[in-house]
Length: 255
Ligand code: ADP
Ligand code: MG
Image (cartoon, rainbow, N blue to C red; front, side, top):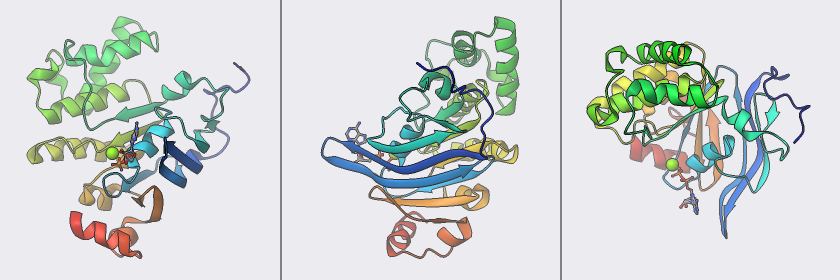
């Protein structure tokens, strides 16, 4: 372990995420076939594409839930694919929200928000609860702190999951289809929370099928198919005026 990399030091360059020539295989199956992607600080980038195109794998390579086969991933100036980097310290700076909410069922909403703050960040009980309550307020759930996940709707559980990630003071947030498991009437509240986060300047990399969200909130939209980025650009360009046949075929199915 090297200690001269100082992963908590401010990044020299302005980019939040830089992915270069990223490849990932599972056995014989090459899932990512050379991905180059840059996300600037404060940017919202939406990744769209058919099921199986590698979107989740890309996100999981950014915080090393999957180990890339080759290529580099740099997060806030720290090359996370460098074997000498302390990945736990890097992961702490990245909030991740999944399609399934992954809350602890035996803990209240408040406890779900304090446990990692206390164990990982070593915050005291009072400080952790103060930060947890502020983040429950941020997602519109101040009155639910004593509720258990089973007592909350899917949309409320997902908002708790977002508040939990925010309680760790992440520099950037990764969202993997955060509304795909929700009943349609619950999607809007979750998207509203994500929209306000974007307005506050949070860096966000979002895999989503919500084209209206991508159009309204994304600075850039990335269309992936079969392990490559087929095209990327402003939402007006990629969603409104796609240049590639594969993008047009995909959009015709989801719009
Ligand atoms: P998407 O999120 O775009 O639907 P994924 O990244 O989940 O796509 O998956 C891309 C491909 O990689 C799929 O063919 C999937 O079956 C395969 N895959 C994903 N994770 C694994 C794994 N852990 N082991 C083997 N194959 C995997
Ligand atoms: Mg996926």
